[in-house]
Image 1 (cartoon, rainbow, N blue to C red):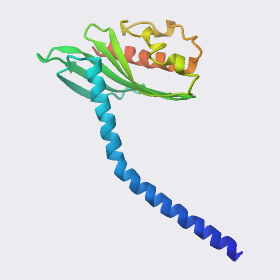
Image 2: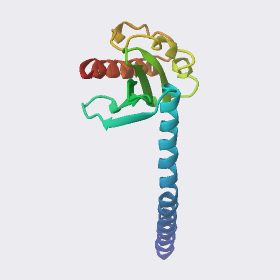
Image 3: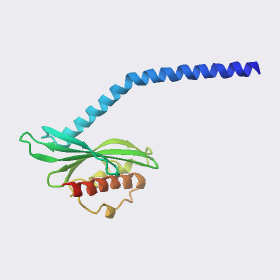
Image 4: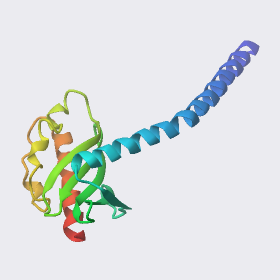
Length: 174
């Protein structure tokens, strides 16, 4: 009995020290991770709109997959377009995108911020394989009509649903 208590106490101490060390490491690395993510997003803004000079970001809280809307301006303060950050979780992981829409309402491009889906199975839904479906298309379209029978149907349908959320919001906000 005494041996079991000693073993339990030893394991508790190991867990407590490990937890404390993990907390300390997290507090050191979290700001670096947040800064790197913000830098990646700003770089993506420039990739979506190379003529970008300034932008105005706002949070979107409409209950959908949208998290933010960015209005992009050129050097003369003309609206170049809009960037929407949108994310969703499905049975196989998460997908987060930045979707660029020009002032005419056409999808110029999108950037995958996160594509954590089942490896191998979700590959057909990646931008390089399936994403062309959305590029150079008006954002206000019938996304339900897009054929998603490409093998990675959960990933592809989630991608389609993210574009549908942007379409619904953008159509009602401009």
